[in-house]
Amino acid sequence: MYTSAQQPTTSSWFDHKVKVLTKQLIENLQIQQGSQLAKILGVNPIFYNDEALHVWVQRQIDEGLIVDDEAIVCLRRRLLI
Image (cartoon, rainbow, N blue to C red):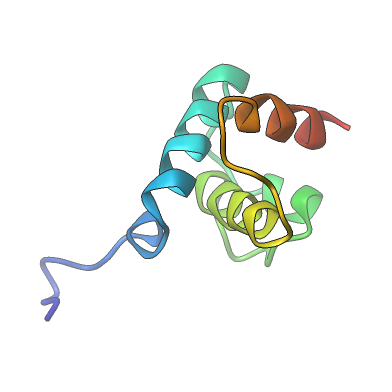
């Protein structure tokens, strides 16, 4: 059980693959802190950029993205379109 000193983070709700891909996107695309990315990604605007990206990556996987060596390239392409 979480106490007030141990609140779960959004990324703790996601699979390891989602976390790894999201981290790679943040680093490769130099995504800054903020909250404007959620609206662009079609994610609930209550999320900060990193959280919104986690949700978006999870949705991509749920919609059939195959997580392999080419997944990051595919995600970058979809994100930049």
